[in-house]
Image 1 (cartoon, rainbow, N blue to C red):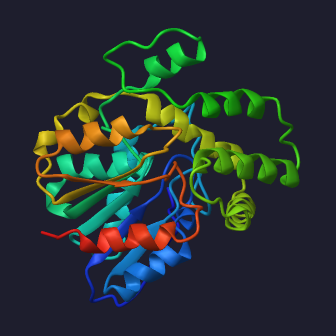
Image 2: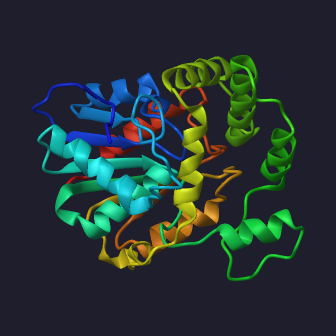
Image 3: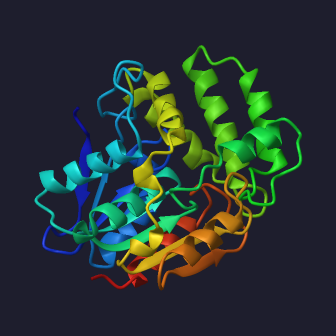
Amino acid sequence: MRLWTERFGDVTNPVVLLVMGTSTPGSGWPAELVGTLVQGGRQVIRFDHRDTGRSGCVDFAAHPYTLADLATDALAVLDAYGVEKAHIAGVSLGGAVGQWLAVHHPDRVAALTAIMTGPMGADAGPAWARALAGQEPDPADLPPPAPAFLEHLERSAALPRTTRAEIVAANVETWRVLNGDALPFDEEAARRFAEEAHDAMDNPAAALNHDLAGRVMTADRRVPLSAVKAPTLVVHGTHDPLRPLPHGRVLAAEIPQARLATIPGMGHSLFSPGLPRRIAEMILEVPEM
């Protein structure tokens, strides 16, 4: 497995490892966010997950993988740069990767920032299935995605995705829905990212393997988050259509001394003007071990 990476800033500064979400390459971290971290005295490393961007692809049927394997990829990136300990900042699936590392490799995690994510051991599958079937939720469930997002999934499934233009247009529309209506949507930035992400991959369909990997609820994901020792910040939007705010609240409650920072109007996207800088400034404020 080959992983594409890039590093920014002074190599003697403390490291922030940026871990992207499901099916999304490292370029999903906006330049404004990266630049703000560098200006704040951090060395920043971002990378393309396996099956995204310029990293290698996997025959998932022959070699299925799990969240633990994605977390091991992140460790491999740190090892390649000779980094013993880093502040792990992860968005969505990347936030779950950060939790896994903080639990199973605490010596490698100086701090944790988990953005628009939920507890790594919470299986959202049944809640999704009930919502898609129009059934009443189970009181024990974390809330499923918002109806607007579920409706988008139905519409999106019928869209043609044979040409580059069709694929990019469909992805931009998904980012629009994930952004929500409360904060402005930077369509130009989303389109530029969608085009770059498409063009970087030999097999764009491979990114769908992340959905398969994320559904596998292995025992290592169910280790109590009370084991997390690193200073932790949980960042969540009040208008997240994919993982509503209770996901972030539960995550912050399960990690000792974690701080929850809610961003009014934020959805499940970084494509809103000014939002990348705001989140970077939050990351800079987290104390490190």
